[in-house]
Image (tube, rainbow, N blue to C red; front, side, top):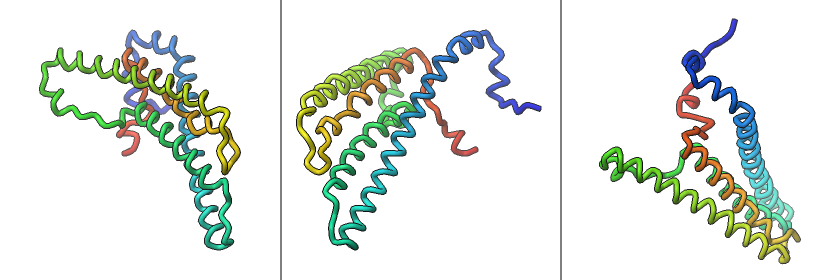
Length: 186
């Protein structure tokens, strides 16, 4: 006995062959998404543990490790970029549409495409500037950890690439959302 959801029952149309042809791509893309989510969660947990250790060391042991504050700061930057990228993927970013909703449908579509072009520009900016930051900072070292300063900027071009890819997929009508509000209420 198989459990068939309502969405499975509606997938008997002519697009099934197209969906099956894209299955390897879809699986690969979902794997990349999963890596991003796991990395974000690991950064969050590591930040929590580092900050707890720093507070414990300072208050109980009267000696705070030199690497803890710097490590937590780097991880917070990474969490910011990873989280923003995941939020973009899920369309959880802020969109002020009250004015655009009053325009004719044709103009709304033009504005939607313009927004996608601007998002492509933003993703490209993150890639180019982030890469430049990484290159410029690669020789300097962070005093607390001894890591290259470029580690602080590493997530910027990575997030830019993901924003570019998500924007391109969304422009071609591919849903990048992994979670929907109905998933949260089930």
